[in-house]
Image (tube, rainbow, N blue to C red):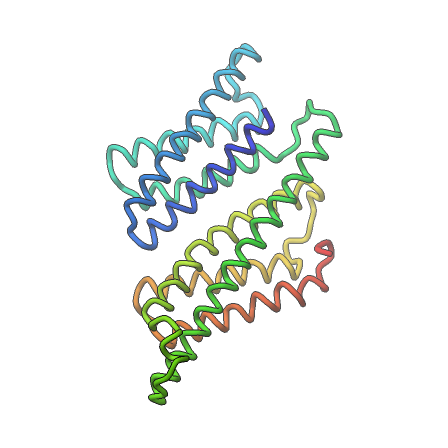
Length: 269
């Protein structure tokens, strides 16, 4: 059952990522795939709920963890209804971000009636998923940085009218900017997922962990900076070379966060 819950979390994360892509890029194909993934998540959640009712011979709302699971199921159910009847896609996206957070808290919080070995294993897997999601986000940001760097190189070559093989081998400016933008579209929610799971891990390990820890603060700063990038790009407030320079500067913050800030963390060694 634990493995199935973890599989459900992965599907839920993929659905949130695709809804975010649709939210930022108005992509109906991504919306449809996200909907079917969410429907599968709802099916699994409903199955778990029914099995639990028959096993415990009662409705699972008598403690906080049971309540969280039922709350998550309600959010998924409502988002499916909204998506199908009202067609308010952005409401669906934000609802599922909240639903994913609730589902993650329920899945990775060690239950009181499980053995210590199982609890330790779940916490270890939570840490593994947190690190994997964060590194995947950093990988997407890195590729986005490279495309922005190529954009600046190509821009300077065109400005200086240096027509040559180097110019022809680099993609056109619009394509470079678009790919860089799309990579960040997937990187931001991936980092958000990693931070949600990381906070959950920290709260399990130490309920009084310091929220002001430098690594936590700097990670949320990175998320804020890239969210600003997406906002400025989506609203056309910044385009072209300016948005490329902002993306390059944002990646420098990622490098500082990854290589430097961790040294000052009280538990992020």
